Amino acid sequence: MKIQIFGKAKSFDTKKAERYFKERGIPFQSVDILRKGLSRGEMDSVLRAVGGLEAVIDDTAKDYCMIKYLLEDAKLEKLMEQPSLYRTPIVRNGRQATVGYCPEIWKQWEEAERHAM
Image (cartoon, rainbow, N blue to C red; front, top):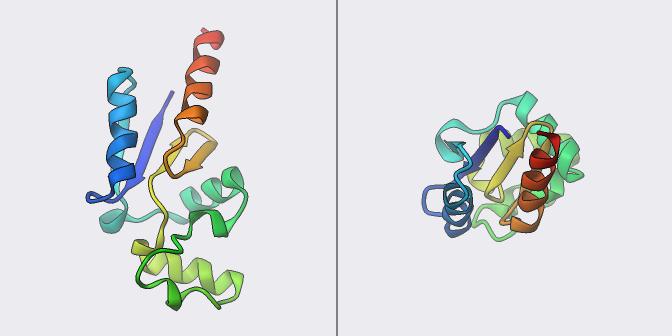
């Protein structure tokens, strides 16, 4: 598995996701989404995996009003400019991805990896 965790340093769910993989000895790359953001290719891959843009937008963010009523393309551009609007953690495993704390899905990834060996 090649795990990438895009998260915010002060996010409780990001810390829980990192702890989940550490406890299982699964190596991961941690990316501070506020400093680095997501590349356009990474974003497209995540959107395909999670079913669309609304899944990655944090509707509890204080700046959510800036993006709420925009059209889809404008939302994507604003999200790329304002990484604080991402819902985190965004966890990627190749072409698969989750948004938020999703240990049940990560466990499925682990089991699929074990069966593939």
